[in-house]
Length: 101
Image (cartoon, rainbow, N blue to C red; front, top):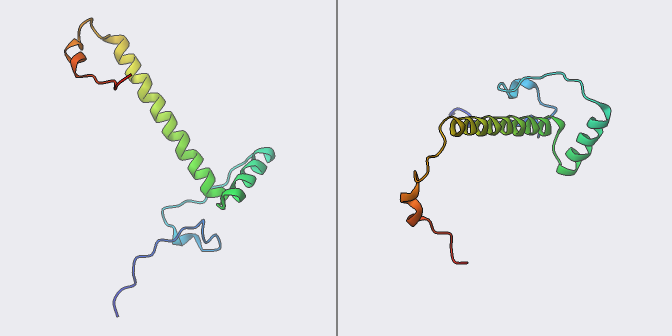
């Protein structure tokens, strides 16, 4: 008999499962305002998901937002330190196509 197929367990689809099914996940404890928790619960019921999944997604979205903001700040600092010179991109003007008005 061969080895069993790879199985991926989603702890959110099977919350009764023992945590060892998701070794990449860590269980944490957090404090949350009751008003906010009620809002989270309402959203998770409507989306048929769990608090954990919702909070993970919210954290990922915030981390991505912060990374984008940091990149934009670095770009702005770079252009402030070395602004575009007049005529620097004139060569490309003929290549632009803004479509038909």
